[in-house]
Image (tube, rainbow, N blue to C red):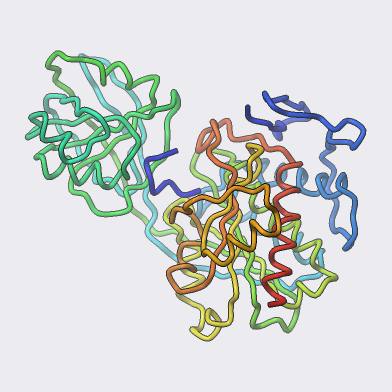
Length: 419
C-alpha cells in the first residue's frame, strides 16, 4: 500500500522458509490441512478444494518474495511480471504488458546528527535534498498549524511525531512556521517509508521510533545537522493485464499492485493481494465471470499509484463508463478481520453477501483511487495494518486469509458482472 497518509493477535506463515510461525490468535485446522507446502500448482479447476487453493497462493507469494524487493524499475519487478504472465497464461488467459514512465525518487543516504551522534533515517518520497544546520525544535502533538504556533520554529529543524494528519500537512505547516527542515518520528520502533504527495521546499526525513523517540522528549536546546541526499530519475513501470481472448470490454476489473518498497520483500504488501487476484482468475477461468473480467497486477503503486493512474489515463472514456466495478486487493494476508470500503452501492453488496466483513472509510492510498476519481464504482479489500508494513520483515502471510478474501472477491465480482 502506498503511504500517502501518516496514519498506520497477528496470524501468519513465514514465507522465507518452511517454518510456520504461530501468531496470537491463529487456530490451526489440522484436520483440514492448514499446514501448506510450497509446491507450485499451475492452474485450478472451477471446483477445487481449499488445500489446493491455499497451496497455489502460498506458491505465488513465495515466488514473488523470492525475487527480492520489487521496487519499480528493478530486475526483481521484471521477474515478478514475467512470473505473473506465465501463471495467467497457464490459467488460460491472454496477457499483455502495459508500460509507462514516471519520475522515480531515490534516497541516496540521509541522516540527522545531534550532539555528534548520527542517526540514519529515510527521506520521505518527494523530499527536497538539503543539509541545513540549525537548532532542533520539538513540535508538540501531531504538527498541526496550532502546534507549530506554540514553539519558535523559524530558522530551525522541526521534529514531530508521526500520525493523525498527512505527511504533507506536517511539512506545509513546518514551512509556514519558517522551519528549514522537518524530521518525523515513527510511532512504531522501526523505520518507515512515506510519500509527501506534494511539493515542499524543505528537506523531510523519517526516523524510526527507536532512534527518534528520545529526541521528542528532550527539552534542552540542541544544535543539529539534517542531511537529506536524494535523486530524481525516470523508471519504466509494467502493468500486467490478463483476460480471455476477445474480452475487450469487461464489466469488472480485479487488481492489486505487485511492486514493493525498497528493502522490503513485500509478502503482505502486496504479494498477498496479487495472489488473491490470481486465485480469483484461476477459479473464474471456466465460469461466466471470465467473459466479463480483466485481471490486473499494477506496478508503481508504492511510488504514488503510477500503474493504476496510467491504466485509467490510457483507457478510452467508453471503456471506463462500461465498468460496473473495480475491486482492489491490498494487504489481505495478515489480521483476521477483513475490511471493505469504497462506493456505497458496492460496500452494501459486500455486507449483504458476507455480513461478517467490516466496512471502513476507504482512503485514497491504493490502486482503486484513480478509478474512483474517473467515476468507476470501487471496492477496496484490506485487512488493516501489519507490524512489518514497509519493513524487511514483511515475509509473512496466512494463506487461509488470502483464500477467504479471494472467495469473497470471486462471489462479489460474479454478482457485479451479472447485474
